[in-house]
Image (cartoon, rainbow, N blue to C red):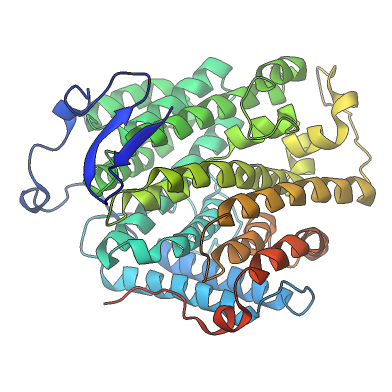
Length: 472
């Protein structure tokens, strides 16, 4: 599905959805939009800020991940100085500090009420892994470095909050579905209800709550209020953003992909394990290249990371060109595969103990897994050669991502080399120190692609050009 939002001269015009006959005059969303202009809406009645404790933990994650990434430059040649990466991390941390200073709206506190204040990093609540979601949210906050120059300081704050809320909602849903023994239909309904409501111009909070109460498993109702607050806050931010309404259909497309992908994971685990059905369905998913395997196509559906850039685009100060969205779609298709592969490699044995055959294991052991109806007693006997082959395959998708992202695009701040290094650091930190060997082996595979991307930018400029930061 394609749409246009600009006329080539920077002027906004109603989006045109190809093939649906929807134009500005008959757009079904029109009657559902805000009736009042921005300046007359008054203060927000929903939580559109992040709690102070959550912001503090996010800052600690950013600095810890960034510090670890800087140390990697002592072992790998990435083709640019570590000072470039440090300036990106400092800019993200500076934005978080400003977020703390400017909190004047109602906030949502993300830490589960039954999780002790002393619990940090990867210590988990039995319902939702809050620490892991905050780590991933710290990674999502780094994506804004790509578009900082396109977003005003006020909208930059809103974009950050929206990304954190979205990452936490996705983490909650993932954990609920994994632990709640949902069927395929039930999982699809839960994801659909939450993701659709987050961008629905006609969102009504009481309707959302009634439906959510019916879908959630009884033992998971402790997450009810938090999920409602996240949905309402995200919806308010997106509907109030400069480009949110115009990017509605693109966000809907990505969401529908994630909803289906996540629901299909029900066939990766007991008691509904059915990998042949999973392969049959996933083989039909579209891909930029025909050599993308069926389980890698599913990986791109399972990940929601493409949304991070889309959320930032919603807060641009000008309309988003079609070519920017096309470049984003291909690059992040591949980055989504990389993210899922690395996350699954780290959690492979833990998932297997929980009765789930994750996509990294399928990639390494597909022939012997296809006819299993139970993983009880199954031992894959993985070797370092298996991991190295998987890292090489994943690194090739990282190469495709960085090439698609930088083709014909100026990247003077070396954002994509920075991002390509930070993805394995964020995804494989379980916690930093335990996965050193795996991170280094993977970075050996991706270093040539990073060097090639960095070499496209003049060395003096890449070393000295300031990284965009928020202004007061």
